[in-house]
Every structure is written in structure tokens, then in C-alpha cells.
Amino acid sequence: MADRIEIARKYLQAQRDGRIDEAVALLADDVVLVNPMTGTVTGKAAAEQALRNRPAGGAGAGFNITWREPELVDGNVKIVGDGSPFGPIRILISFNDQDQITKVDIGLGT
Figure 1 (cartoon, one colour):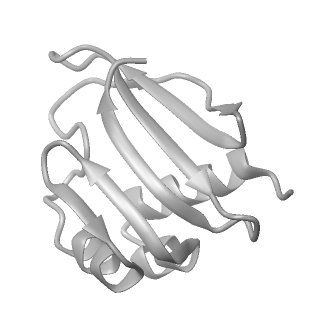
Figure 2 (figure 1 turned 90 degrees about the vertical axis):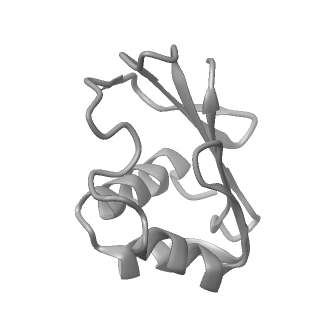
């Protein structure tokens, strides 16, 4: 198993930096993106389109969110951010056996 925390960090950093091709390269063909603000997207092509068309600033834009250290939980990477007016924000990134990202689930709570 590759270092999934490092893969998750690369994915999120590539998104923040606008390097969408690098972020998409880490996704499985059947990836599912779940975001309460934008809905659910299924498939690599649809995920790429969603990443390219997301609002400027990305998740948490305008908020002063402080991200905790990522942690590995049952083979998934969980990252929690504090500082949102809605409470903690949780990102859960799941992987397949080839260490490709199969799901990015963004929600509230820890």
C-alpha cells in the first residue's frame, strides 16, 4: 500500500494550485465526488469537468479554515477543518487496491 496520506495531500494541493491534470491523474475511472454544495459526481470525466468548473477559491473560500493533520482510518484518509460557520468540515478520501482515489466525500462533522 502506497502512502495514502501523501496521495491525498498531493490531490488536495494540486486542486488548490489549479493543477487539475495532476489531481485527475490520481483518480480511479469510477471515482465519486460528494459535496453538499455541488452535489454528487460520478466518473473520472465528470469529476474532471467538476474540478475545472468549480468556483474560484474552492471549498471554504472566504472562511478561515484551519486543517488538522490527515489521519489514516481503515485505509481511508480523513482530514478535518475547523473555522467554518457551519462547524467542522470533514473530507474522507477512499482508495482502491491500486491506491487510486475512488471517492472524495466532503461533509460536516468530524
